[in-house]
Length: 343
Image: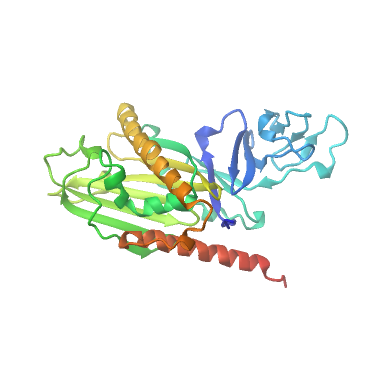
């Protein structure tokens, strides 16, 4: 059975995904419904306490979510505000979850609500600083563990083999530098005087040589910012050359993941048509190359714990192994604290 880290913020979705109708997602095996009211966003257990119908199949009326089965209405705190069939007793309450909207994303706290600390929301201010025309969003459902998706991003040598026609060509042979950070860890790759990958041919022709740099920054449970840059080999790198992207892996269940991506750039920021072309290329890489491989991998692993299968680890796995160990340690510490007798 998968143990999840509870007292952290998970991404529930992007702000643009939540409109006038409820949005339902399962987070760490718990069905949740989010809805937008005049006072902000609320998140409730997606289960009416009457007959356990999903509240997400209902409607939003007067800042309340109304069950589509028998018309009971609940406010953002989970309190029953209307019972058409009698008194709205306190027993008709639905569990609510702390939720925050920040950096164009919706964040939910699945643990002890008293410990919900907005200071723990990842700092993704680079998204706020980027105009919409220079952002590329993805939301993918992947039938694989969020840990496998994290492993995939902390070992980017796979790009040379899984994405040879788009993102690959500059990773193999580069020993990653792995370092612990205040927030988690970072893995960095740098390869100089290489042929630029196809993804960058609009900026650097295939006949030129380039310097390639990538840095993946991870924090528990599974939020990453990946920074990349490709520059002509005869000059240095500036912030304007860098592409920064959020990769957020929210576990749906032990073997399925909500995968959220928001890529940003500093060049051609007003060029929406350029964004469309980039999105098509990235969609092919993420949806038609990464996703099938991860799902095939999960099928081969089945329900077993990865470590129990004794994988033959390589130097390229250093970042993924360290992240797994850090996450396991945080989960163990949280569970120990929860089981400790109160004073």
